[in-house]
Amino acid sequence: MILNPWYDLPGIIHAGWPTSPESRRELTPPCRVDLRAQGIDLLFRHDEMAFFFTDRTLAPRYLVNPIRYFVTYRTFINYNLIGFVSDRPALGTIDEPDRVRFRVERIVTVESSDASGQWVHHEGREAWLEVTRTSITDYLRVLNPTLYYALAFYLIGCENQRYFLVEFYKAVEAICNVFGSNDAFLDALKPFGVEKSRYKDFGRVSNDVRLAPLDIGRHAPEPGAPLYAVDLRNLLVEPRSREVLESSTVFCRQVIDAYIAFLVQNSASSSGS
Image 1 (cartoon, helix red, strand yellow):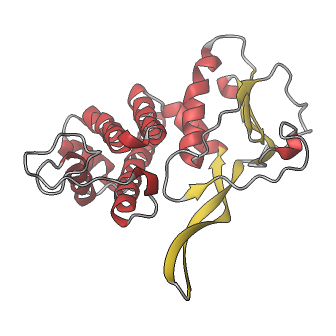
Image 2 (tube, one colour):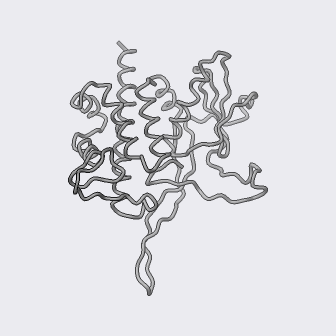
Image 3 (cartoon, helix red, strand yellow):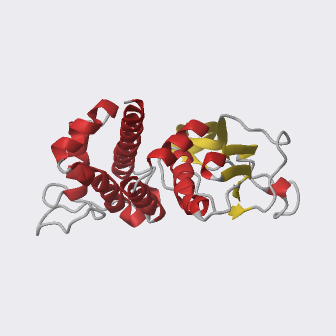
């Protein structure tokens, strides 16, 4: 899974050899997403995502990373089994749902106690995340360099925990820059849930050098400032560390989601006029 405070992969039960299909995580029931308008059949099975190219041109191949980024972003699942197939399943032999379901575990906080005292730990509860075919096609229709960079920066931050705050800030900054100013950015995305107060809070946490700077912040602290060390080994347990991770993740994803919705709405308006 990519770095996040809410979900983890489900446990794996070995039913045979470790490399056999039966021993792999059943994250997604076998299914196909019809993206033939883009020259692709997108296939899922177990813990695999595969591409079958229905177009002989190079264009569909340039969509592999953007699609992988989007699916990873929406599901938190960091696919490392991504491939290409030369033969696709015959039509009618595999489900073609309007939404693909992904089995994960929701991380819940559990308080326990015994004679020695109380403690807190985290456990997983089965949960399902969904990605609709429409969300994928809408994303591909409005995909532009800004959106691609924002997703890339966000995922880089998830891969490199030491720099998650820096990379999340770059993701937000990439989208903000396209509007020309902070005010224009907030005005454009306010209808889609981006609030000025949260933007300020995010900037304060990321850029503080004087009051309560973080050791994972974007800038070196001023002399004598009370530097706070984020505990990367216990991000979900240590309260201040979890708060930084959760608030920055929520806002970064909120901005990316809002920008996608903004682009989709503008695209629909343009095509209707």
